[in-house]
Image (tube, rainbow, N blue to C red; front, side):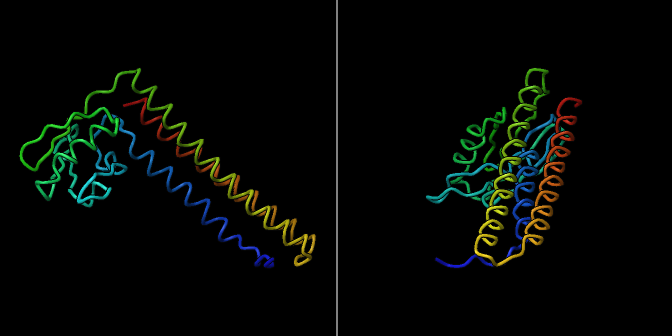
Amino acid sequence: MTKPGPFDLADVKRRMAAAVSVLKTELSGLRTGRASPNMLEPITVEAYGAPMPLNQVATVSVPEARMLSVQVWDAGVVKSVEKAIRDANLGLNPSTEGTMIRLRIPELNQERRQELAKIAHKYAEAARIAVRHVRRDGIDHLKNLKKDGHVSEDEIKRHETDVQKTTDATIAEIDQALAIKEKEIMSV
C-alpha cells in the first residue's frame, strides 16, 4: 500500500473549476433565440472515419442576428455535418448550398423556453454533483492522511474547512451561471 501524498487544495480548486467550465460551455450551447457560434460547439461530426468537433471540419459564423452559417471545408463531409446538426436536437433545420449550410434560428415560444430552462437546471445539477464528488475525494484523502498519522488533527480541520469554503464558493458560482442563463432564456 502506498502512502497518500500531501494534501493539495490547489488540485481540489482546479477540479472544481473544471466542473464550472464544463457547465458554462454546456450553457453557452443552449440557444436563446439569438444566433451564437457557441450553439454548435458541442456538436461532433463523423468525418474521415472518426468523430470530430464541428469546429475542426467547418467555420461557424453569424451573418445575421437570427442566422448561423457553417462553411464546411471539405465537400465530402457536408452530409455528415448536416446530419450531426439535425441529430443534436437543437431545433435547427439546415439548408445546404454547396459547402455552405445556413441555419435560421426560429423564435422561441414559451413552452420551448421552459424546456431550455429545465435543460439548464439539469446541466447545473450535474455540475453541482461533480463538485460534491471532488469535495468527497478531498475529504477522503484527508481522512487517509489522518489515519496514517501523517497530518495533525488541527491541520486536517483547517484543510476540511478550506475544502468546504471552496465547495460553497463553487456551488454559488454554478448557481449564478444558471440564474444568468435562465434570465437570458426567459427574457429574449
